[in-house]
Image (cartoon, rainbow, N blue to C red; front, side, top):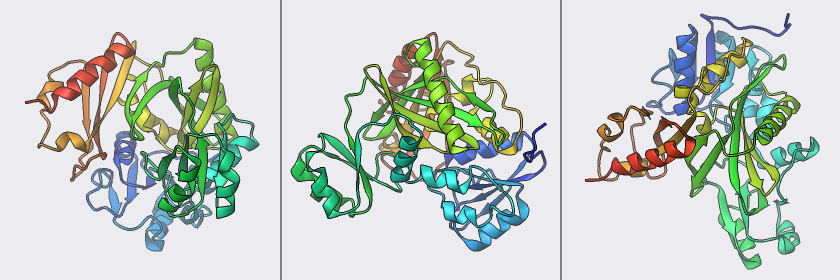
Length: 380
């Protein structure tokens, strides 16, 4: 019998963050009989619209945090940049999962790289840039490379490519001369990710490895299962579980990986449900969002089995709305497609407005069909 606290309905769960990941978390929690309080400064946020209580305030607002501590049995996060220091102020009065310490590692690339190196996880070549002296010392670093801000980067933001040694100093200046990580640009064979859940008493459950394709740093398509040998998939699961255990992580997390030849490198850790796990909403026995509820509440981690031979998830960005509302009938008329729109008020280029999952006989077949249907959304 676990000595860790177990949270059951109709308890209130607190959530920092109000985007689409939070929206699906709220839906899953309420379906299981929980109540949810969302802290999110945007009054029209996707998660806030679904929550029992929406506190319209900054994530580190003392009154908002006080309300979470007083009313919630457990508090979690919807995105990695929720201030760990703010959560630390309430961790002695209510459960906070993941812990502020684990969150602090995942929201700082330098701390994350140091952690991965310390536990012996494979990472690509990199150097840390904090000063002009570091820029000079990096003169011989193998190029091309990518310079990434240590904090507040996502969907390609906060990172720039460096092709020539003379570009390094001006690129760092362009990024505001904040602490950065300079990573060698690897010749990738595949980009992979794995979503997994872990409870406070160390139980883990993994989903199938996804293979991913990005455009301008934003995920475009993710398909499952990834094209890799079975023993390689088992090795990826072992690596991801090891990272979660060493981090003492509680909740749902994703590990992004690069494959170069026979080598696998950890790119980064996302301490929350992941864009590449959206397919679990439609074609798995348990979605990543229900699993997040279960993990932070100390409940049983149920099956993650894939119910179809192959599935593809395609992001729908704000660019599709450039000429007005897309023609949704063109995807909804196809029985292989599940459409998800997040209820965001304003469509902007590069903004994730929704996604669709396509399930067919194979992952590649689903990807090809999905790309064709997505293109038809804006055709005359």
